[in-house]
Image (tube, rainbow, N blue to C red; front, top):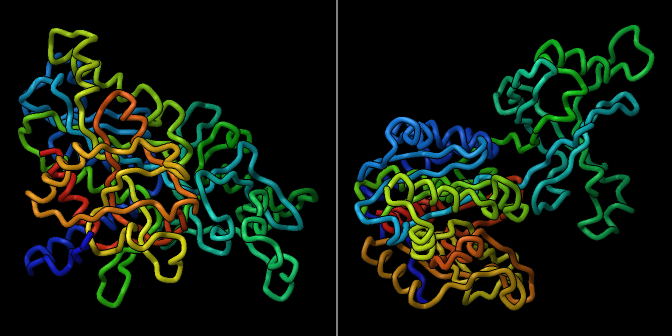
Length: 457
């Protein structure tokens, strides 16, 4: 395939659109630090764009309006945005499905301990991470705690410039001969990913005086006890803000671009969809980084249950219409893929990998080895996607996730394809994927938005 650099195709007006789009994208990333925060921000913006709560519509109106815009908040961790079309649901939905969770560190149920005058928090890493990358960087803590009175306490420490931050310590270079002789994955172990949390002792306390002081501060500032950590949901994420990368400001470097780059594009795209023929559906799912399991992941019945609700609101409900809606749907599995980096050229096959700046990437298959764990899109659907993108002047390329036998990965694609829906993975190329700070091309993120809008409109 002859790749086209997206920047060279942009005129002055659209180049300005690219930079404006990415300025707002960075603001979104700095707010949507976790799946809960992404959920809140998507719903907030959806309301501002005229979307109604589907649960309220079910209770009050009991039917869908042609061109109506609706949202579903699923357990504060996943979201669906819907624009109801003029054709029957049984003819299928036009779906773009992204995920809003990202690799991070989660606090363990009993995280707090003191050792040698330092208080630390024990963590369990979430998703695929290179553990050494989480040492010596500023970290923030976000999440929710319930105290014994049942009050929900929202925690957000480390993102504001006036907040303290936290870190995971590492060994000084002068004494790290043994550490550096170990394989990379063993140089920092999971049980060493402990977050440094405080060091001032409470006066007149002999045992765990620093820990007692920390607990005192927690009680005063946040009104919960050590016991409440056991039922808390607290996530540790990089405290670094999203920034422009490159002297030409052509790229974005930020935490959580896998996969909030696709989530943001999906959100912006469906906001612009008006009166579609087929119903447009944007999915923003949790738990993809750990296999999409659980009641907020794509492997749950959330999507299927939602289709049941929509078919019922349409009138003349039947299981057959639900099955037809699922089977006849067409889906872009909105997720990122690897971008070519000349410093790690042997990890990919240059002719079939994606390149930054060359537009959104269509990935026929993902998986690993012999395409294990992939839905593998068919030629008929790929032709539809190509025509859709070409007709709307979307710069696109093909790519696969690394050279054969080098590794691989999966997406939510196969979990939608199991219903018989047509599905293909489609998202931007990323450098440093799953690192605390990831890199995308601004041209690619914008083409992502154009592609998803073209597909759903």
